[in-house]
Image 1: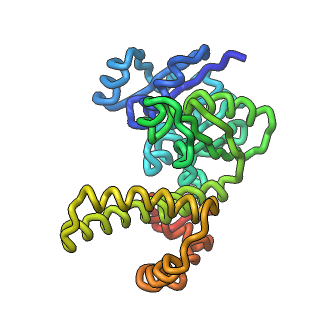
Image 2: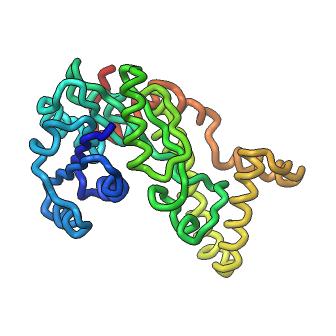
Length: 282
């Protein structure tokens, strides 16, 4: 079935990424963007900017590609204009989980977030190797949530999701709350924080200890792969000495109650900070 798709925020970072892929599809796609800079980026990419009200009025799927903190007011302006049965697709779960989206009983709501290409992906081309973010050449999975649970709506949403994040290996369907625990808790609160911590440790090794940067970087990059392969896949057991060092590191760096981040109250706490909210109504 040929769909009509509207991208609201088409000139932003993610708006440009998903629009680049949707532009190559056989579906009818409208690109809406309010900021002059975003409009120029859209035009420079060979796309026509359409006024938001015109772009969304007959759309089967409306992609709200705007920052989380803007989804409340943007959805309030856009959703009342949609036809009954239209699907509102957001790219992050925070606003949906916090009930910031304007609600209509005759409109469907879905969220889809890219997993990005796996660190263990067997890349076959230079383009795949250079595509660390995904959506260009390297295959990635996507995790999505659909509030109504309708099979028909899920199929339509998945069609668009696979196009906008292409190439896609698989779409994993979860609840909105589960997706919120994946992003931000698992991948931002934990994984991205650890990535930043690794860079800080590298700088200390180079700037404070005085190890030449090429040597320190080479040692870290290789051992990060080994640590992930052993820790996440069990490829090889850590040595006894390494296990002792790991315990020492855990005692020095990790708080005893760190797993509390997987409590609902802590999820609400981090989302309030991210969305600049006083409270979350659920």
